Image 1 (cartoon, one colour):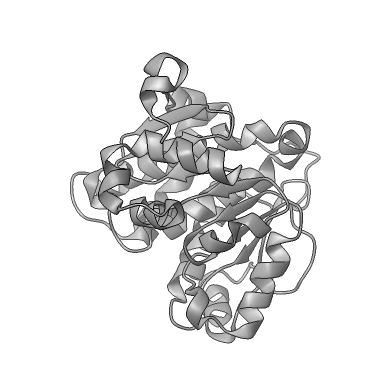
Image 2 (cartoon, helix red, strand yellow):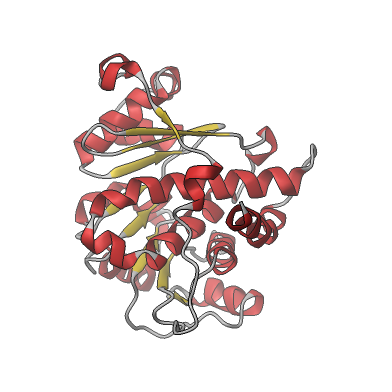
Length: 281
């Protein structure tokens, strides 16, 4: 297993608010909803429809021109009830978020087909939860967002091995899967296939709650879509964008918590405030 001891002198690069500020796309007067970025979601299921709602909510509050959601009937209805501006017709996107709230062994045929089409679309893709096992099908730049248990399954290891050396496990997965890997946790690690490693700290322990990862996927999907041109020119931009998503997510959780418990929708509601403060410096 790759470890920090053989990564660039044993040091990860800390990525925080100052660095994240440079990776937030601010629309100009000539932008429209398409030039601001369109992110597609192939997420949620009849069993876990809330994942679709949370991802879409987070993406819209991060700042994107359009969200296109394609899924089964129940999650689609709930997405539109919560966010009527979401578009549920097929069309072009600049990035995809796939797999959140999906069990590949209990997924309806339509949602599975949408997932497979998204992976084959050739645009940057956030791969989460139920789509992680299909990561090798993705044609575009891949950003995997597993938690420790999911990463352990991908690597064929015990969860304890991953938690004992989280940065090493992220580096191994990035190398083996030729993907950027964002390993979620109190300290998150972003590894790229070339051996680069970023660490992001600061999310309160209260963030360990159901749905928080779905929101993180939505934040990251929005960032990939709003930086589509940069990613076309330099796929390596996916790593700092993943780290930026972790920073925004952590800062929004901190604001929502204020030292106590919070809901994921509370976290999403704080995203515009976090971004505004970062842009003000």
